[in-house]
Every structure is written in C-alpha cells, then in structure tokens.
Image 1: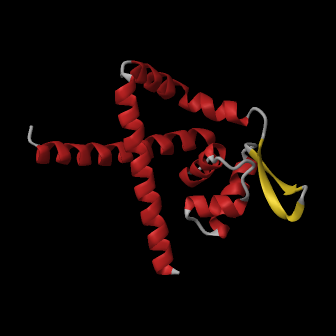
Image 2: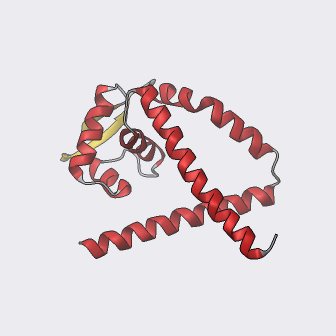
Length: 155
C-alpha cells in the first residue's frame, strides 16, 4: 500500500469511526430517554477537568448557546442524572452536580463496549498505545481549534 493509499484509508476509517460513534451515542441516548445533545453534555461535564462544571463552561465546551444548554440541563434533571445547585461561594453562579447512582446507569449502557475496548487495548504494546493517544489528542486539538476559529469569525 502506498503512502497516499494509507492516508486515504485513515481518512475513511476516521470518517466511519465518527459515524459509528454518533450512531452508538444515539442508541445509548435513546436507552436513557435522552437526545444525543443531552448525553454529550452529560459526558463532557463528567470528563471535564474542572469540577463541578457550570452551565456557562459547559456551553463553551460544547459550542452551544446558553439556551440549548439550559434545555439539555432540564432534560438531564428530569432524567434524575444531574442537579443544578447555587455556588456556595457565589450565589449568582450555578454548579452542576451528578446525582449519586446516575453515573452507574450511564456506565451500564457503555459497559460491554468499554470492556471490549479494554480487551483490545490490552493486545497493544505501550508504544502503540502512546501513538494512539498522541493521534487522538492531536485530533481533539485540531477540532477544538477549528471550532474556536469558526466561532471567532462568526462573532
């Protein structure tokens, strides 16, 4: 396989991964009685390095309007997955708290695929995993930078 053919194959696989992840998230969201945006808000809030997350930060991380975030947060509260609470140090701010047990409900939806991915990861050497980590981190930075640039152009 030539370098150009290999690159074309990577582009195709990257595209198909995006499609399959979107379909899987749609499936999981449906099982939880949520829409995909709600599920993605929940996951971004859960994995963000700043805890607890504020609705404003979540809006920025997701690239969604405050109104869209408010709608998703209402859906997540209704599903019993999060609570919005006043910040004890600044009554004007709202903090998002995860409801105990809610994470278990979500994790159970991902359990089989996460187990299979962990088994697959175990077949890879440390250098391969480091290359994958670098590749995925690089992809995330590229997407984040392009979203920020597009947002700045529109502002």
